[in-house]
Each structure stands twice: as C-alpha cells, then as structure tokens.
Image (cartoon, rainbow, N blue to C red):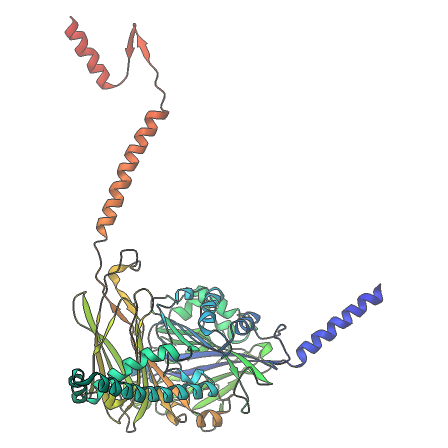
Amino acid sequence: MACTRGGFLAVFILLCVVAHADQQETFHEELLVRPLADGNLFAHLQFTSAIQFNPQNTSLNHFSLFPKPVAQAIQKFGTEHVQLTFTQGRWHENHWGAPLLDAPSGVQLIASFLPSRDAKSEWKSLIHALSGMFCASIDVLDETKSVEPQYSYSDLLRQNSKLEQEKERDQQLQWQEELMNDLESKMTERGESVEGEWKKMQNLPQSSKTFAMNRERISKQRESSPPSRLFYGEMPEEAVCTENLTPWSKLLPCRSESGLGRLLHSLPLYDSLYHSMGVTMRYSLPDHCNSVETCDSVTLELIQTLGVVFRTEEMEEIDIAKLYSEPALSGCVLSNDNSFVYVQMPAEGDITVSPATGEQIENSPLIRHKLSSVSPLALKITQNTDVNARKRMKQTMSRSPVIVSRSSLGNGEENGGILMQIRNPTEEKVVLSYIEFLPWHFPIYFHSLRVFLNGQPIGLASIASKWKFSPGEDHAAPSVLEIEFELPAMATVEFTYRHDQAFLQWTEHPPDAHRGSDIASACVTVKYPNKPESLRVTGIDWTPRVNQTKVMESPYEYRLYTEGLLVLLPTPDFSMPYNVITLTCTMFAIVFTTTINVLTRRFSYLTEGGEYSSGRLSMFLYRKVRDFLTK
C-alpha cells in the first residue's frame, strides 16, 4: 500500500515538472521619480509579471509568480491586449511637462481580441470579469458607452491586423469609385430629371462631394465589412477609491508585504494632486511570429502601473519613502534582484540625489539605484525652491508634441456645441488621429462640422485623409467622430460642431441630475514612424530593462486626452414627484394607522353611580351640560 502511494506521488511530481518545463516566470518592480517644474514630485511605480510558454503544447494552469485570475481571463476571452486605468484628477502639462502615461479622468478600458473569437460577445464577458476582479462598476460599459475605433489605438493590434485594416481602407476607396460609376449610370437611365441634381453635385466643393460619398460608403461598409476586434469604453463619472487598490495590490507576488508593494498605502496615494492606476495585459511575440495562435513561444505580460503627483512644492529635501509613509525602500524577495529605482534628472534645475551611488544610464536622463530585500535604501532628493531655478527648469522640461483643449459651446439646456483645438508648437508636421464620442442623448449634427486652420475656415477633405462619422441611436449607441489628418508645423486646427440635448425620462437621469451629464474625454494620437528622442521616457516601455534600441526604432503612438465635459441637460421638476410621494405617504400613514387603531383597539365602559364615566374633558363638559338642562 505504501509503495502504491509512493508511486502516485512520484507520478504527480513528474506531471508537475512536465507542466512547468515549458513555462518561465519572471517579476520586475521599478520606481521612477521625476521632479516637476512647480516643485511637486511625480512618482511612478511599475510592476511587471511575465510568463513564457508555448501556446501549442502548454495550457496555463500552474503558476508561481503570475496571477492565476489574469491568465484565466486572458485565455478564456481570447484577448490580445487589455488596458484598464483608474484615474483621479488631471495631468497639468503646463506645470508638469509631458505625461509618462496619460489617461482620462475616471475609468478607461481598451481591449483587442484574437481573430478567431467573437469579439463583441467576448467584450461583454470581459467587462463583467474585470468588474468583479477590481471591484469597479465596469459592467455598465455596454453598447451605449463603448465604441469601435478604426484609426486610433491601432498599435494595440498585431501586424497582420494592421494589414487587414489597410486592405479594408483600399476596399473603401474602390467602393467610392463604384458608387460614382453607379450614380452616373443611374442618371443616364433616368434622363434629364436627374441631370440637374448631378450638376448641383458637380458644383459642390470637394469636401461636400467626399462627405456625400462617405455617407453612402458607410452604409455599404456596415453590410459587408468584417466586425471590429478593437473596443474602447470610458466612464468619466466613476470614482476611484481604496476598494480598487486592494484587489490591484493582491495581483503582486509579494502583495503589499514586501518590496515596493509596501508603498501601497491608501492615505498618501489618494491625498495627492494626481493619481492614476493602470493594468496592462498583453502578449509579447518574437520577431518571427505575427500571431499568438500560430506562434510556438509567446510571453504573457501583466504590467501594473501607479503614477502619483505628491505635494512637495514647499519641501527642500524630499524623502521618497516617507512620501509613501514608509521608512525606507526595499526590494521584493521574489523579484530575483530585479528591483530598481530610477531618478529622471531635469536638463536644468538644482536637483541633487543622495546617496550619490546611482548608475547613469547611457543615452538617458535616468539614474538607476538597485534595491535589495536585505539592506533598505533611504533615497532623498534636494531641490532648489528659488523661483528663478524653477523657471529655468520649466523652460527645459520635456513637452508633448501637440497641445489639446476642448470646451463646451452654447447656452441653455436645449442644444449646444463642442470646440476642439489642437496646436502644433513644433517646427515639424505631425500625423494625428482624433476620436471622441458623445452619449446617445447628445445627438451630433454632423453637417454642422466646421474646420478652421489658423483661424481660416477650410473643408474637411483639405486637411483630413480619413474620417469616420457614426450617428448615435437612442438607448443603443453613442455618436462617434474620428478623423485622421496631418497638422502642419506651428499651426492650430479647430473642429466645432453642434449637438442636441435630449429630454430624458425622469428615471434615466443620474442620481444628481442638476450636476449635469458627463461627456468622455477626447483622445488625440500622435503617430511617429519611430519614437522621438524627446519622448524617450514615455509610454509603457520607458524602462531601460526593455531593449531601448528596438523601442526607439519601432513605430510609436503618443496619446493625449482632453478635459472631460460636464453639460447640463433639461431636467424635470423633481420636487413635484417628491411632493406627490410625500403627500401620498402621509395620507396613507394617517388612514392606515387610524384604521388599524379602530380595528384592533378594545373599548371598556366605566360606571359611577349608575352612569358611564370617562376621564376625558369632552365627556365631563357633556355631563355638566346635560345635568343643567334636565333640571
């Protein structure tokens, strides 16, 4: 019997060894510290858990460092890239420079799916899984709050998917030519009755012709184009709190008990000027592979980021660990000596770092300090609080290639408009894609779209190479506006359009209806053939641990988000339902209590001298009057 048990144990151990033979797990933790021009400090935590395996022969069931719930969700829903952010506040570029990872205020979710999956149904299942995983209301990201980008976020798709998109765009151009030929043939058949309309169309400007053809093309495209595999959703009204941080920290191998995870104290994190917490789940493929499903070796990565701007404008010496309410910095035991702290030194400004034992990264403004789980590091930064020193630092800080802003137009609660402004302060032209979507109760008048270049009105086709207009549907889909264009050097472009503000039913209003309705932030993507040197320390692959030569030579998309808008909707008089409910409840309480009192109360009669007696004043007066009248 003992031999049998020993044999089963040996077989079990052998199976476990075979299951882990093709799997290699790693964990890295990094902290980036950047002094800002206004005296505040930006600290960015980044934890990377990775597992390398063969998707053809290995099924992910056994893990040592990688969190099992994440791997199960990725495999079950067939996702290729997932990005989830929880942001509180807004990044102020005028004082803080270019953001490392910009994100809109609230909750943002982006996901791309494998070609073999039904992306639309998997998207619905994914948002429910992430909602329970991170204790957030992500499950409300239904069709009314999510869109399918066509020109933005294309870097989240693999190379083969990009080729498919290019084929679709070429097919769209062929559709335009076919539509024009069909239109000419129909007019020839109908004769002179339609000749006038054809002449009118010939006299229209090129932008109007293209818009008319584009409208017909969109209706035809919906019928024959394949479904999208990229989805984007945003909830600007979602609040970020500790209940999101707790499940986020439990995905770390050392949790919040060791390493840089000990810095995850909710009080200093949320009592800050800016707070952005993110999760990125993606596949990393070797150069010879183009698809996850056909590759023989892939790496599944979970990248957890947490960026905070601390209030340090009045502090000369800044202790990094004490900002997180910790005595010192230390590394996680399970990171295998892959715990580092980086200090991004500004080009100008009196900034000193102690201890001065850091390693200067080649061709980079970063200074690296290695962390150990045995000997903690007390990292301190000394800054000059002089006004002139901060001005010099502000003049030389890295900035975004474009400056974006958005504002609401109009007055009243019936209709309004939106003005989007994008300015290129550089001396080089840039390629941009701009996307924004409005809830279904803000229907857009697409014919009212106006484009201004340096203050002069121009046609959309004069500046844009591709665009997509998707009108909203009541209770079904938002209105989407997406444009890809080229912005000249030292130029400013403005997009403005009008929209309606629908009158909702009183049950469809948010809890605080008089506060207004939130409109999600617009996204502007700057597309580069390779990553520019001025944006070296930006993006998810900023760390020197990644091959920076390959990163700098690869195509790069830099994203910026505008302000979220708050628009007042026409609201009913909520006091009337309140008054009706209050009066009804009061009358119901009076009638109900009186009826119950009559039905359940027992009466008894008291007699004094052969008469019924009562202690009430009315009965006393009644007896006195009766006795007086009978005399």
